[in-house]
Length: 293
Image (cartoon, rainbow, N blue to C red; front, top):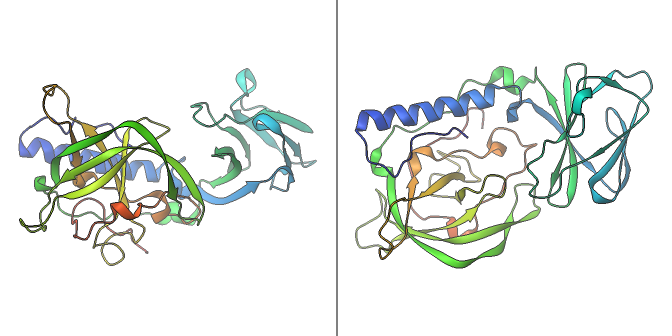
C-alpha cells in the first residue's frame, strides 16, 4: 500500500485531494506491476508429501523445508529465500529450500522458468505455490480502479475503545477457509448518510500481521451493486499527540477504502469482514466495483 500523508493532521482541502489522488495512483501502479495480483494465474496447494507442480514434484517436510525435484530438461532458476549469491542461477535435480515461518518477514522461495515466476509461500500452517505470468490477460486488460469522488466528510476521527490485550479471533476467508487475526479494539463514529438520531457506527479493528498496521475490513450497503460484494478494507491511524487523559482516537479515512485483491483476481484469498463490521449504511467513498465484475 502507498505511504501517504498522516491523515490525523489537518491540512488544506487541495492538499488533501492531492494526497488521495497520489494514494490512488500508487494503488493502480501496484496492480500494473510485475508482482501485482493481476499476474497471478494459478495457486497450487502443497500438501505434506509430494505435490505435482509445473516445475516438478515438491515435497513438503517438517519445519517449512521443501524439496523440488526439477523435471529433467527444464530450465529453472532460483531466487528469493536461501538463494544468496547464487540468485538467478539455473538449478537441476533436487533443490532444497526453507519457506519462512508465520510472522517471518523473509522473502518467499522463488523459481522462474520461461516467462513465469513460481513463488512458494505460507498462509498459516499451509504452503502454496503461486504461479505468475507477466503477460496474463488480466494484467494486459487492466484499465484502472473506479472510485467515488473525494469527500473530506468521509475522513473521520473515531473514538477508539482499545482492548486491554489483543484477542485471537477467527476471520472467514474468501475461499471458504478460516484464518486467525488479532482483534485490538473497536472504533465508534458517525458518517454522512447516517441519521443524527442513530447510534454511532462501530467497526472492529485488527492488527495486520505482516505490517503491524491497524486493519479494518468492512462491508456496507453499497456492496454488490456499487462496490465489491465481499466488502472493502482500510487502514486506521491512531491520532498522535493526544492528552493521556483524553479518550483514545483513531482516524478512519474512507476515501482510502480499498477493494481486496480477490476483487480483481479470484485466485487470491482475502479475509472477509466479520459480521460486526457489516454496516447498515451506504459508504460512497473510496474504490468502487472493479471493471469486469
